[in-house]
Length: 115
Image 1 (cartoon, one colour):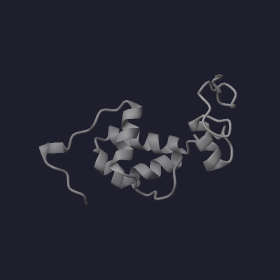
Image 2 (cartoon, one colour):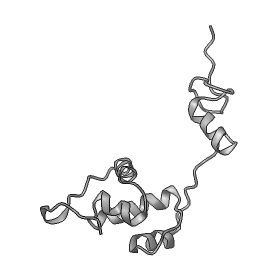
Image 3 (cartoon, helix red, strand yellow):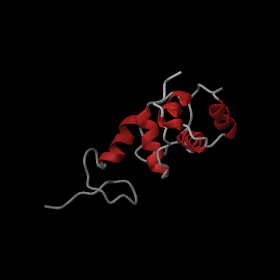
């Protein structure tokens, strides 16, 4: 039996559905294009406003990552970063892990409280 591979150029994963691997099939379902790329534009004004707490709109992945980097550098914990940019703590934790950042500990050894 012949093993079928994904129809997307350069992808060597096994075929799953409609000629695509699971990853490219999900891109096809969500965006109508199996080669869709997530926006990576970085607007420094959006990042700066998010860091200061003045931004409540959508951000690209690159903007969110840069915002998390800057807030982490200021010593904020995952919970406080999540509150500042309105995402879940698990989202901050996954981004921090992907960026290679260690977890910040609450200052003063106290348990942090949500404001």
